[in-house]
Length: 139
Image: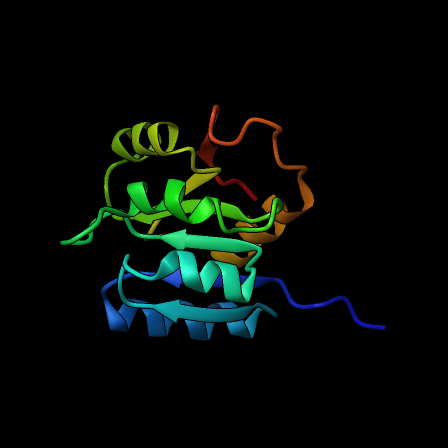
C-alpha cells in the first residue's frame, strides 16, 4: 500500500505564488490546498488536517504570525506551521519564535528545494514545545 501524500496548506494573498507553489509541490508528490486570506485558516486546518501549513506573514487584516497561534488550537498534534515569506531571515526567525511556528522558509525557495525541505522536516520528530527554537527548514 502506498504511503499517503503529505498534505500542505499554503496561505498567501498572491494568487500567482499560490499557483506556482501548488503546481511545483504537486509535481513532487504533495497534496496541496491553497487559501488567499489569513481569515478562515483555523477552519481549514480543522477540516483538512494538513501535515504542513506554509503561511505568509504579510496580510492586511490579520498577520500570518498571529494566525499560527489561533490555527494551532485546531490542528492535529503533528501539523507543522512554517512562516513562508519574502521578509529577511532575521525578521522571519524573530516572528517564528514569537508566534510558536515550527520554522520558516524564504519564498525564494521553490520547486525541488521546497519539496526537499518539507520532506526532511516531515521525517524529524516535532519538538515537545513547539516554536521555542524555530529554524530555517533545512533539507
